[in-house]
Image (cartoon, rainbow, N blue to C red):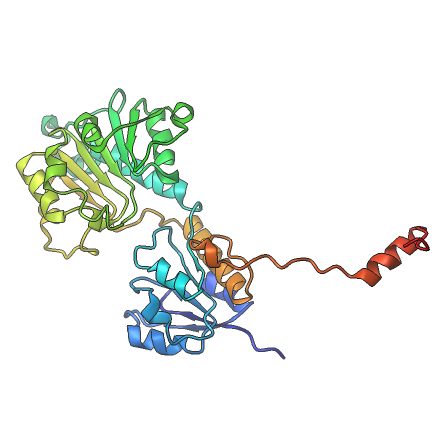
Length: 350
């Protein structure tokens, strides 16, 4: 019996995805709740055909240099700021992520944060819980979203999904990217330079990926350029924000409120200054955390790995230049001639 390819999984993932993966490959998984040591990952990879990367793990050339059989690496996330894609490309290893399947889910969470924060839902829940309903809650008024401006930083697929929800609430949508989109008329969005967006927007929502250019993009000067009545939302990556600058902006009233799905550091320690602020809402990085979406992400990751270990094209490959090609169909001359003969074709002239 032919030996199955070996796939290393360096952490805990969904059991149903592992069961699906095991139908096609042999799985060697780190099942401890602790983070698998990097040296142990490198040791396991020496005999591996594939790696299911589980954060936190820096995936780079050093990780794979002693893994001669490694054919594919995949990760159940859209973002891959922990992956040196150029170094994997140099090593000839395709890397797969999970774009598309979580766009709507992350957009739902982003707009939930916007709506919850704008109407001060959590504060009003506490108001009722503490038996103060008979009082007039004049000090915890929210603001309505209709006729307000939402500024999105990073108008990709998730940004567009957020913009649709915002327009349904009667909001005007502006955005900033490295370059203007060519479909603004279709999506009823308006490109703005960053400074203009910050000065214009009532809600600023960050959906950008973490890159060298976006690291600490939201710094002290960034917050000074926002309206002092503005809501700041981050569903991108924590290190895009200079956390100290955000704390200061919230404490001094440079901005009114923040709602965060991602933070830096992550997770936040219980005594972190952000958690002591009344005008900051933090959830524990749950943008894609629904059962259906996490299942879809996990199965797509497994599919990428199964394809890669068999040297077939990954469904979603970041470094397409080293993705595997579809096998070309082989032409069987004898079978073709037999089919022609059976169809009554005279082959004497061939």
